[in-house]
View 1 (cartoon, rainbow, N blue to C red):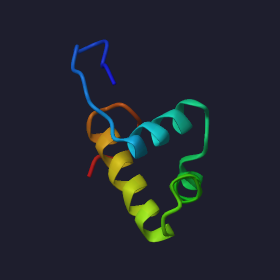
View 2: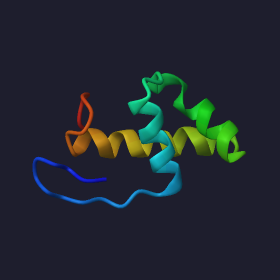
View 3: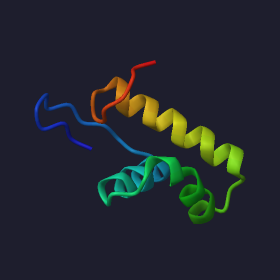
View 4: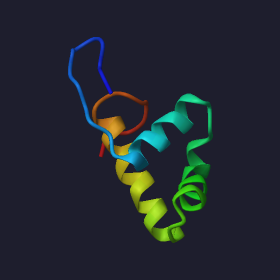
Length: 69
């Protein structure tokens, strides 16, 4: 992922890429864990944790709006 304003480049894991594409496609962030769970065939608690960690990172970078941790 490239931040065209700062020029910073970020590598994404397959899960992070999937989540980011879902957000770009307009998916509701509240349902992302369910999508990740089904797509990667993992348990819900792991999917939820992965989504929350990635969304928190996106917020801290200013990529998406929301409270910073």
